[in-house]
Length: 426
Image (cartoon, rainbow, N blue to C red; front, side, top):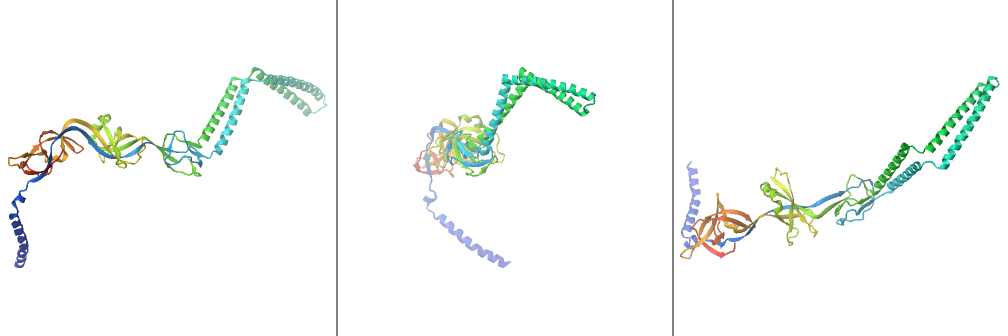
């Protein structure tokens, strides 16, 4: 136990020595150094139009992205455009093989022309020579019937006399029946020609012609699909295939964007939703791409405010429309956007560094010259307004004539002596 106490006492000796040295240094310090005033930078409040603005970052995206997808399967013969090219609506982008669809279209056209001819024939009715031929057929059929009747009567007499067989008699009966049928058919054909085509037959012929025409139009449409034209005006950002590739409706062959107007997508905090949603048209926006640090900001307008907030980040999406006629902006660029929510005219402002927050109070320090030429700090409780672009609006607590402390005020107390470095401008 004594050994432990001895060791502890020995270990305290260096600490005591160090403390004695520090005490002597403090006692011997130069009084001028010990009480040197705190150096501060001062200036005066300003009256200006203060813009309430906020800055957020985001990315650019095109107005529209269009994937070009073939409507039919086929091998690519030609791609007459290049990546990066600006194409017009209706411009040819890809030529596919069209041998099969071209033959199908020709076949459908022939069928349509044949059906159309049948309808026109039915519509015109029978020609005079066709009616004359039908009448001659009736006369011939009647003559054949008379001959068959005479033959049947003669055969019947012979059969009754037992001069011929029953089969010969039945054969004569059959020829007579056939002659009767021939007369009936010839008379019916003549009647149809003389009466003309029935309305239902004409309607059927018309329907057949129209159906054939639709088939031809469908075949022509299929043939036209072998040429892929641009559905929009825009810029080709990627071509996914090459000449000779076999393509189909399963995947795109190229991608086109429309970027005459481009959009900056920002995520704003939930607390701003009401202000932005209620005054979106009055909010001016300046968009600054980091790719062009020397260029002036691009002006934009709020085009869309998201209606759903992200529950994880408590933010909502805002889209800023920016004119891109200069073609400098590209999708994917990173940008900083400054949103000016309001402009306060004739606001009394000080630099942000002049305003301190201590517990629940906001303070600004000014300086007062004493009779001996020294300067003391004076504390002013203030009511701040908005802060923007490095300035804070002061609603109450100071006047434009107060010489305020801009820098060096972090640990000041009311009445503390200070020294002026130089006079700055707030």
